[in-house]
Image 1 (cartoon, rainbow, N blue to C red):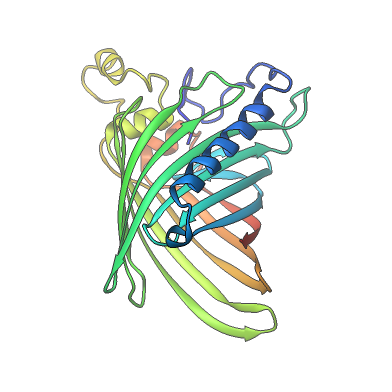
Image 2 (tube, rainbow, N blue to C red):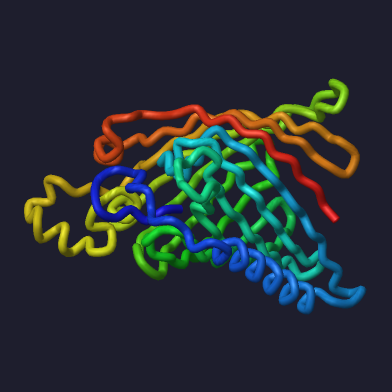
Length: 287
């Protein structure tokens, strides 16, 4: 996620040069401390933990319908999950591969998510807390609470609610469906089809796209008739497919999706652009 500031463009001007060595060492420290903390919680035979590593390359980075990085990106992820209590810790980053920065690659975003998951019958509930941060930029970090409920039925419907409790103080709701078609074509195990629509309240839309993202009241005062402000409602749509290939203990996943903003106000903030295709390849392994 990216909090927009200083204009109505979704991609702000290039941030100042990074401080050499600080970003990488900071990320390494975060990974190390997080893994040590979660390992201590899950220590012992009765509290086994599983480590999952993933490395994805994508043609661009789109988040909730907004193309946040039009360049190719590399997105590493690590998840340490307990196998008994349902607790997990995820660390995720997005690195710009084609930026013009004089120092080379830039970490655009770094997120840390703590989640708890519980399943019963055909239901699966997940509760989480996520911290968004943006190295090498002046975008403000923020915190978000989430809760989701999924059903293990044919279309696997799922509803997720996200509440920003820090900078934006807004609510976003995602409703999704998906279906897996099993296949036996060499290493290809099947085809995953998915679609989702997102709903956002006014604060979310202002926070994601508006120049007064951090002061909705000031924006309202400047436009007293509310003619230039968004309303709550549908925000974005995504649909696509994924092809998972089983390579022993490693999974290779090819993904193609179409992402689009659906309301006129949000589209106007990105120059009227309606949607974009995003292609990605990810490799994942569990330990």
